[in-house]
Image 1 (cartoon, one colour):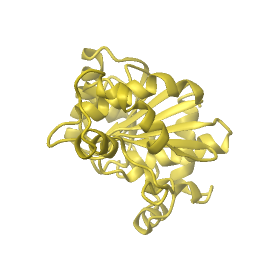
Image 2: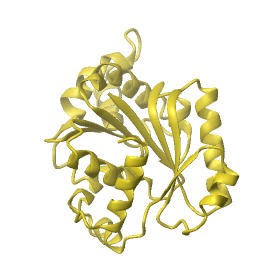
Image 3: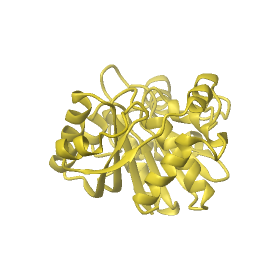
Length: 253
């Protein structure tokens, strides 16, 4: 089972990249998948056609609030992350035909993701073994990476836009992963759809990580996202989808 992490600055297109990656893995039959939405904006569900509220599912943060705030539970004694593990699988796991999904949700308490992240990490230790791949859609910041939600991953994909801040993000993300002793096999850099053509040499000169290429701009992707349609339903002729297929094949999928 491979663990795959997608990260990048806000607006770089990382979540649409994850959705198109999922479409590709489903297409080639490399399933079942576990989708983990760590981004508080919770855009991944919409992009793969999953509405947690309609499905009667809760985010990890919501389950923590119900258990330890509204339900009068205590955080003393048994670690909260262990006590809530069963509830995550019962009430927080969406189960689909090709993939299952869980989401961290918004902050548990003001300014802190520590307990939701710890609960997710504990739950993943047992569940992830039953899937072909676990795909983690991380937020724009690096705080979740810093808390080592997954201490061992196979591939990290960092989506960049045409800015110096984006190049700096790659350097920081790689450094934080090393400093936190996160074990990973590959750190890939992917140009987002706004990244200009012909800058491959510039990218490779500025960064030390492997640059796979860029995601093709596709107006249809924008239309799907704007209308709330699942990117899993986008035609296989989509330029963006076909560019992601090529990137995934270059990464060995």
